Length: 200
Image (spheres, rainbow, N blue to C red):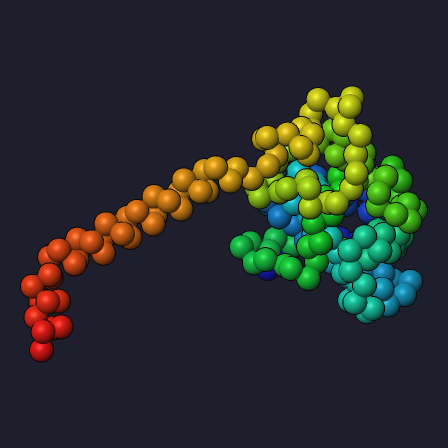
């Protein structure tokens, strides 16, 4: 895991500046922010997706994960940080698929809301589906939204957001037909040997 940038967290240059740096990183599709507090033994990591979306986090000392870990780590006022590039390494322990827009929380630091619901709803009202996030499914967030005024996000019941069983059934039928044809071709080709085998 390569270190991209490291430095000090101070009252003058706090975690808001660090988050902005991560948002502005264009060459690192995924980033991990490692934070250590100088005031306590608190330390941990926060995972980011491209575009500055917080995926999740973990406090090393307590094994807290998810939004509570992110909230605790982003409340640190003095300490050290390092922005890491994990490359192709998948960090499942710090990815809870939160998809919180880091740009929206910079002004709220160091006191983030106790619940991520407000942050997630604010994010989903303006986030275009799949924007810069391959494989992202907003339905995984399990949050009810009123999309009556939103043109950017399709309703969860729209055909574009549902799995098309018709295509899957057609592919399955074609696959079964190919298997039957291969078996039939083999039986025709080796018919004499098959008959001879049963006659003995």
